[in-house]
Length: 369
Image 1 (tube, helix red, strand yellow):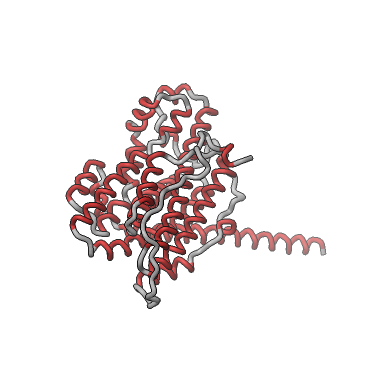
Image 2: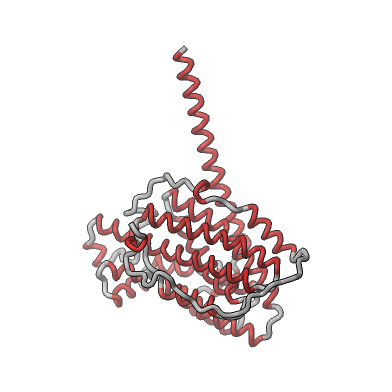
């Protein structure tokens, strides 16, 4: 079966071409570079992993309940449409919601891979080029993982959301070398981290929890990279140049906020667009989800030096201004620790199973004697 046969809607042309602009920059300064970035580069090399080996793909996933999250998490819950649904219908709705969420993760990771490669090409500093090369590999692995999960476990895909595609286009078409950092490392990666984290912490199913925990371990490094590079660079910019970046952040944040409604899913179930929009806007779970999604972006934006009056007003309007005081370093450390803890638990269980198997074999041999 072709991958295009799994798309719920026609994704359009097989290839999306985004016009490239800006210069490819070479650096002849092969000195040591910045200690912090080189340490992150070393960590990026040390932490490479194989998705075929680290993830237990043999775990079963019920496509009609892939995450095990409560019904309240679906914006249709409690409406007249929900009440008319059979259990089979509700299972198909869960499948579609998960497909839509993870499809956007997949498309975002491909975008991250392209942006990381663009950073390698355009950033002027060699230490940043080194780290971006490791991130490009990370993003390729993430796209591989989400593609496999969708194809083998969920059985359907959704096309890229219009708002996500618009932000990717704006990020890649800009000729300034720092914009792939700002658009991808800060906005798209920051929002993805929060979305991954919320699902990781609420799912009761082991395979998606494992996938998200391991991907987030990589993403924590990527956001740290964006913070380091942009914090240093933005100290050198004029007020006018900073305001231009803030305008980009404001527009990108509104696009990302509006991306999260999943109206495509409800429309696939025959619900008119206006009603679907009303249901999502009235969903208490979506309101909480939306707010938490900015828990990584707002403190990062503030940390790199973009905190003008208009940007602050936009965050007040979105109801996320107080997120600026969040401890981003603590959140990232927790992402790292949860992945390591999951590894330890899994390997301990495997060792226990091997020990029991050996003991059983010894006992069987003793009985045979």
